[in-house]
Image (cartoon, rainbow, N blue to C red; front, side, top):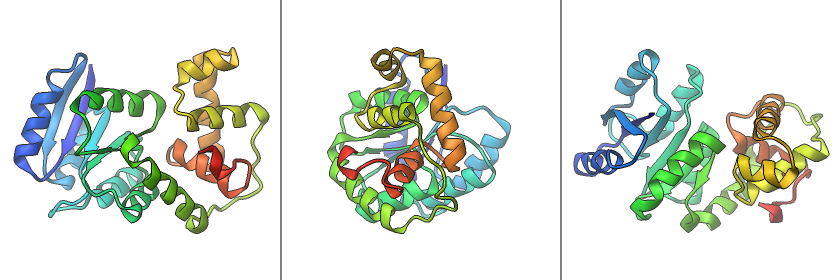
Length: 218
């Protein structure tokens, strides 16, 4: 079972989400609440596979929850579910280590796919905010510092990055490149480690920053 935690301060929305999630196969909601600190304490003592996180909350903003998760550190995939989809908000959540965005206006049927994408592939972005994501990438390309620009990518790594940008999952990448999905995952983890990225989005940003990847390829 995929263990889901949900943090949102709107009780009606949160309880409706819990009911929706309970209809999905192999998904179990193990935590729901409106307090980020309460969740952080829970996550240190209980297994959680994916966190669904709102941004605008009175007790602790989603930015701070995500940042503290990375500081602890907990390598927990974070899927932001919010109506706040400005370039600034997307950029800030990416910088804090979020793995994806799902807007509250999106189809409920897509939620299960979004959760599995974040869990298995490390990212998901709602297609309705694709342009906002690209704008955020432009912005982060200009403003995000990396400590080491001497890192280069192999041809195989660049192939994987380009396919990830085309929204291929690990299995599809493996089939396209005629390698195993396990090998794809090893490449992805190695690229994250050597660029010191919090998630694979960071690898893409590093590739753009060092001009190994053109922004048009995203």
